[in-house]
Figure 1: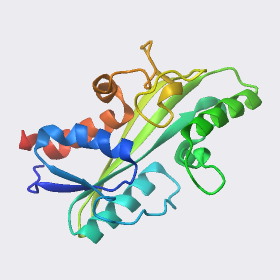
Figure 2: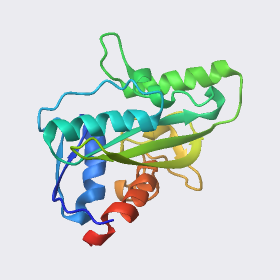
Figure 3: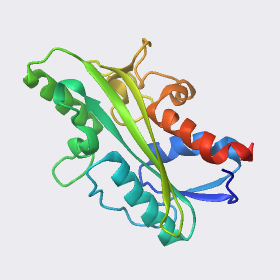
Length: 204
């Protein structure tokens, strides 16, 4: 399915996420702007799933801007924690007052795993990627990458929980990897591959 637009909104105020999405869209010749750049408000993530939250954000941005909008909702799911923090991954990082502290979030994951009494370290990142249009329609793709939680955290690249996530088959955490290497294997890359095959291939 070919798309006939040249401008798209990334419905996020997370600079790290916007940067990754902009990098992934670069080959397609799109003018990419973030919700923050356009002064669009954050949307409260009231959905019960990654897909629901991604669609809330993308549809709201597309309607507000009158342009196609792309949003993802992503998070870390740890087997020993029954899939937590999951859709609450960002909330686990919140300090008193609401500011996000990713080091605090990683510490909370470690402490919760220790309290669980379970020894497995299996985990995966999930990304629901939603492409929405001003008429309120949306198409959503879900990607995953499997790996393990490690401690102490390693690396200063990436963002979020990247320094404690060791992807399966690799000896570097997402926090240690070169961004291009991470982009090639990440949960966001998996979702983007699906979206690109369905939506963008005709632009190349």
